[in-house]
Every structure is written in structure tokens, then in C-alpha cells.
Image (cartoon, rainbow, N blue to C red; front, side):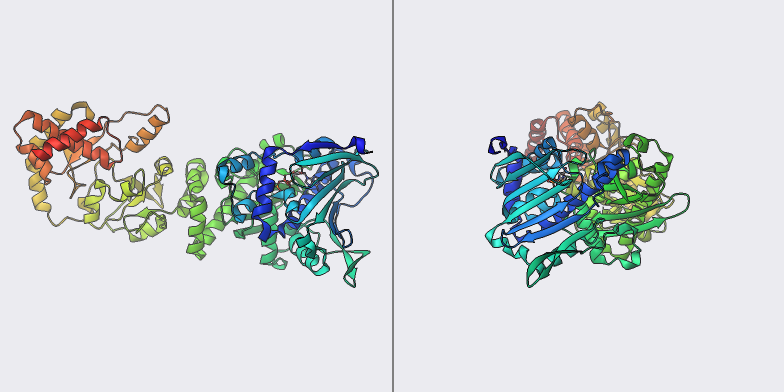
Length: 623
Ligand SMILES: Nc1ncnc2c1ncn2[C@@H]1O[C@H](COP(=O)(O)OP(=O)(O)OP(=O)(O)O)[C@@H](O)[C@H]1O
């Protein structure tokens, strides 16, 4: 029969993954058993699902189960399942190529270095290929449910695999690992038992091991897991370790989850849900807004499909978990899911659960919540724009830096801010800027700082977009301090009020003359209440788009409104005084433009003509 053996080369990416897995996961090599048992369990899930439409697939009556065996003489470990099995084409596709687009991108990102730490690799679910950490040869014998043909796949993981027909196989898949010399401990009963019980208790199908006698496996077998869907068991009977192990299985994550929420709902809708918030963002996270995975839909304990897109809003795409509905029909399709009112309700119930969970973490453990915020905070900002109904709840979960923060880390909630607001202050004040330094050193803040008024510093790009949707919180309006007029008198008088008033009075002409020189560049020139140190700053009208946003949009090739800013000047500053006193027209123009250009630079803007600016600076310095 050797004539029928065909050889295939692994896709280049598979070789890369194999290389990475074998070299980076050696110290975590126990995970191979988790991956193989998980795959076996998925295969049983798939068969149960396909059999709903085609009962003939399970007509042979074999129970869905997973058997792990060892042969100490042959030095092999075998994982056998009675699941869906694979056809020849599926074998080639599944065990010879990389299907997940995220994995490709991950590999591209790793680039030439080809190094990644175990955590990173763990996050993309090393899957089947992890068998090669402990085995120098792996064979897969499989017969797809409903088909007569069986196939044997074999490889030593070095670049090629072979395929040949196999006779007499039972339905499902048997994976045989020829263990490496240094991996023989997996043949021992205690080792196997401890690993399998840790990893399989939450698996919904029986996982069996041989009984051992005198250290040798016998023909008798015993089931080592509870074989009940974890989420259907009463909460009080589930330990944290079980939840954690289940999460690792579900989320393909090495790390423990940050938090979880497990609920059973009965009444109008009947469903159970078990939702996890990961501690770390998965590697392909930024890519998969459109290709979301991680929330599994079951109907009456039968796995139906990954339905994250249907069951949770996009901004909660970090959530992992299962939802088991008693109401949806077993033959529910993706199309049907999109159009069911029932699902809308389910979606809003699940969204609530996640937000409640986050709220709980935030109030119970600020450090833990800070960890969540670092990983996923940006997504909640997306939520502010996308989820009108939950805006207030989401706003409560937002964290910001402020003029009182020591660094750019966002640690402050809107409630914290409101709690510290001055009695006379009627709005939540914030400033948006392109970056932390531009925000904290912005001239717009000078007078506010001088009065001890705290201002939230929104220094990330998404912030400007987000605050466009967040007009108020807890009944208090949000106000951008760089827009419109600021009524600072309400917030306490500065020490030098009388002096400033006098300066303002006398600066009327200066302001007019500045506008005359600057022309269309500015909408208006006025005396500033915002400034105490700097000579000038730019201010927009309430409805105008922030200048850094206008720039960003233009740079990305989009249309952006061209709102000319208002130039505010500080009449007490030497430069403004010099302008007022200067009689030479050319020098006056230099000074006016410098006031404008400085304000642009403080905004983080690039100047249209930097060389002309420098020439002006030099002329002015040299007098
Ligand atoms: N025991 C099995 N029975 C049937 N199909 C299997 C079995 N093991 C693996 N497969 C198939 O091979 C594919 C690749 O498996 P692998 O473990 O590498 O990745 P995965 O399970 O798809 O991804 P991940 O492990 O990241 O979830 C699976 O998607 C599945 O289609």
C-alpha cells in the first residue's frame, strides 16, 4: 500500500508556527494535552450540531467521548474522540495550513526576529501543533462522520506530512504522539491524571483514562471529569480554579481571567451565561473588530456557533464566554440570529452583565480595574459613541488623567472629578490634545491652574471623537476649556484681577491691530482670560472641530471643516507689549505672526512655512 502514500509540504506559516511553538513553549509544554482535548471536545460539539440536521451522522450510536491512552512500550500517548472527524480535504486544510488571519498578522508582526514569549504565543491558541513540543512524530487517523473513507496523516514536524487511506477506522479522530525521550513522564499515571483532571473537568463530554495497575495501564477505563457543561452547574459548586481552567480552554489564554460573571436567567427569556473579562488583550485584538470570536452560542447544551457579533456590541469584543439559550431553536442560523427580537434582548442583557461586572471590579478593586483600563479602556470609549442606551453607565467606567495627575496614566473617574469640583463650578472641564505633553503644558490651562481648578486632560486621539458623544454626565455638562468663552470669574478671582482688568481695557487697540495684520488666518483676536504665562493661544467656537482633529482628518485624506480659530492674547506679556509699542510696520508684522505661530506650535500643529517662522524669530531676537 506504500504507493498510495502522498507527501505534502506544510505551508510556510505552519513551519513558522511549529518553530515558534517548539522553541518558545518548552517550559509550558503541559499545554499540549489541553489543546488536544479541547480540539476533541470541539469535534464532539460539531458532530452534535451537524446531527441536528442530519441524524444519520450519529446513526452508529457511538457515544460522544474522549479517551486518552498510553502505551509505555511503544512510548505513545493517544487522544481519541468520537467527534466529527475530518475528510481528506479537511485534513490537508486544517493540519497543513493556517486558517486564522490573525495568526498570519501575528507572524508578520514578529517579523524576522522569530522570537515571542510564551504568553504571546499562548494567546493565539497554539492548537494541534503543540503536539510537536513533546512528540517527534505525530499521526492522525480520522474518519469523518457519515463517510466510509478513513485517512492517516503523519508528520515529524519538520516541513512535510504524509497522507494515506486507512481502513477500518471508527468515526472520529485518533491522534497518536510518539513521545520524545525527554517527554516520557507523560506515560506515568499520576502525571496524566493530574493534567487531565485539571484540564478537562469543564469539558462537557466524558474524558476517560485507563486504570493503572503496578504503574501499567489496564484495559479498564474510568471517566475522570464531571462531563457536565460547567455553566449549567450551580455557582456554589464551582471553584475559582474550575472557572479559571474553563476560561483558559475557551479563551486560549495562558493567563487567568480578570473577572467573570455567571448567571442563569429564567422568565421571559431563559438562558445561562458565563462571561469572562481577560486580564490581557489577545495579540490579534486590534485586527478583529470585524472578525469577532470568543462568545459561543449553545442552544440547550448543544454548541451552535461562535456568535460574538450577534450577541455583544463591537466595543465589548474583549469578552469571552458562553451563552446557552433554552428558547432559540436548535436549527437557528446566522441569518435568523440577525433578525430575532429575542436576540436583541439577549444582547442587551449580556451587555448589562458585562457593564455591571466592570462596575463591580471598579468599585471593589481599583488596581485591578486600572489593569483592565490599560488593556481595554479604548474600547469603552468606542462604546460611548456606539451605545447610546448605556452611555451613562459607560461614562461611569471611563478613566482620565487630569491637571492633578503626575503622569499620563488615566486613573480618575468622572465621579472622582465631580467629587472634587468647586462649589461654583457647574461643568466638567476638559481639554483635548494630541498627546500628554501637549495637553498638560497647554497655555489654555494657565488661568485655570492659577485658580486651582482641575481640568481633565484627554490626550488620546480617540478622545476628541468620544467627547463628541458625551455631552453630560450625572447631570453636569462637559465643557472643553479650549472652546468658546470661559467664565473664569465664577471660579474664583485671581490675585491680580484689578491689574488685569486695566490691561484689558487698554489693550482694545492692540487687539484690533493684530486682527488687521493676521487677516483671514484668525476669526477674531481678543484679550484672553485663559492665559497667565504665555503670550497667546488659539481658541475655537463651541461647535468647531478641534484643530488637531482637523489636521488628523486632512492627513488621512478626509474632508475636514476649516474653522479659523480665535487668537487670544495676554496683554501683560512682553511680546504683546512690544507689538503695541512697535512703530515699524515690518517688525509689527513679524511680532503679530509670531504670536499666532507660537499658539499654533503650542497646539501641536506644524507650521505652513517653518523657515519663514525661524527667520522671524531670528530677526526679532537680533532686534
Ligand atoms: N480531534 C479533531 N477532530 C476534528 N477536527 C480536528 C481535531 N483536531 C483538530 N481539528 C481540526 O483542525 C483545525 C486546526 O486545529 P488547531 O488546534 O490547530 O486550531 P483551532 O482549534 O482551529 O484553533 P485554536 O486552537 O486556536 O482554536 C481545527 O479547527 C479543526 O477543524
